[in-house]
Structure formats: C-alpha cells, structure tokens
Image (cartoon, rainbow, N blue to C red; front, side):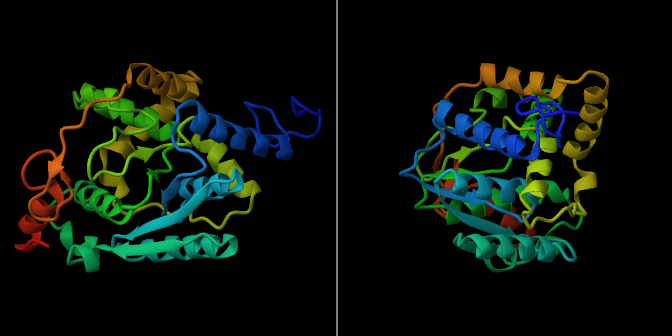
Amino acid sequence: MECAVCGGKAVFSAPALCEEHFCEHVELVVRETVERYGLFTRDDRVCVAASGGKDSSVALHVLQALGYRVEALAVDEGIAGYRESTLACLRSLCDERGIPLRVVSFAEEVGAPLDDLVKGRRPCSVCGVFRRSLLNKHAKGCDVLVTGHNLDDESQSVLMNLVKASGGRLRRGYLRSPSAEGFVPRVKPLARLSEREVLAYAFLQGLPSSSGVCPYARSSLRFRVRDVLDEYEAARPGMKRSLADAALRVSAPVASSFSACPVCGGPAAGGVCRACSLREELLGDAP
C-alpha cells in the first residue's frame, strides 16, 4: 500500500499514509480540534489527566510538541498488580520530556485503596466518583483538564447514554464541558482520532505507555458496549464516527447548577457531593 501523499510505503490504512505523514496527520487533527472548538489557548495552563496508557501519553506528547504548556496529573487508585506498571511508564515519559508530574492516591486522599473499597459494589462506579473528585481538586489553578478520550471512547459513551436513557448528557458538551465555579473544565483533544490512530502514533513515536487493562474493566457496561461497537464497526466501517458526530451536532453549552459541597468545598449537584457521601457510606467518615 502506498502513502496517499508521497507514494512511499504506507504504515497505516484509512488514511493510507507513511510514517512521516501519518504522524503529521495525527498532530494536525489534534491541533485543529483544539483550535476549531476553542478547547484552550497557548497562554493556558493545561493539565493532562494521565495514567501511563496510550491515550494520555499521546495527549501529553502531542500537546507539548504543538507548543502548549502541559503538566501531568495521575491518580493512583490502588489497584494491585496494575497501576504500579502504568505509573512507571508515565514517570518515564514525563522524565524524558521534562513534563511536571503530580501523583495523588486514593489511600491518602480517600482513606483506603480501591481494592479495599469495592467489596460488594460495582468497582467502576466507586472508582469514577473518587477519581473525578481528585482530578478536579488537584487540577485547581489550571485552566483546563485534558482527558485522553478518543473517538472510540466517545462513540461508546453515546451508546451507553442512550441505553441508560441519559440523553441529556449528550447535550452537556462533547469536546469541552461547561464551565462552573470550582470545576475545572474537561476537554478532549483526541476525540476526533480513532483508537487505532492513537495506538499507531504511540508505537511510531516510541512512547513509553502501558497496554495493561484494568482488572475491573470486564465488569463494566463500557466493556460490553465496546465489544458490540467493534462488531458493528467491522460490519459497517464508519459507524463509530457517525455516533460521535451525532453527539457533536446536538451538544451545546449548558448552564451549570453546581453548588459548593459543605464538606469538602468541591462542586456538587446540590448538598453534599457524591464523593463525600460515598466516602461516608464506605468508611463511615468524611474528609
């Protein structure tokens, strides 16, 4: 297969591009996504929610290469045999590129590692609540919080919201979450790139990243939705992008109704935030 730009040997199909032009393509898509949708500017302090996996590693690498002021924030949930290796990859990447890195943990911030918190509960639900809370808390002072969601992730979210009859979530901001007092806006500069494109770019750039899968992932709805979408995509290529594009068309800024949690001061939908109420349920205390 030949590169559609230079006629050289293609390393990727759809688009058919050689290594040089494929990497340029990925970086161009990220740059255009940031600029077209006004995700952030070169004057902004950009915090990347990093794990050591391919998506956040590519986000750190590309945004730094494009000249943005990036730093990394990682959450150590306390998943034995998994998180240690991903954080090692992240530290290697940040050390190589001189990217500031902060690591916060469930054990210190919540009071126990995730492995001790999930007994009798859905692991992803518990993890998601505390992880979102800690990312917001420790990204304070930054203008945006980058997440590594790619096109596959976004198409999965669309289907999950429809399955759960959460159609309202589709309108809350696809590439940038609404701004609110005490809440650092989430942005998704990789959301127009497929998972295959992100994986190929990480490999071609030699980025230290972990390919490990969270041991709790198989119990999640997202894991099952992912398999269904992969099957449909194989039968009808382009379906994932169509789903993500549909969400982009209906998304719009939504006025936030957050208030300050009376316990931790973080954003809450009303009264005590979910992180504080869940901690009391699980551990019998509050921060």
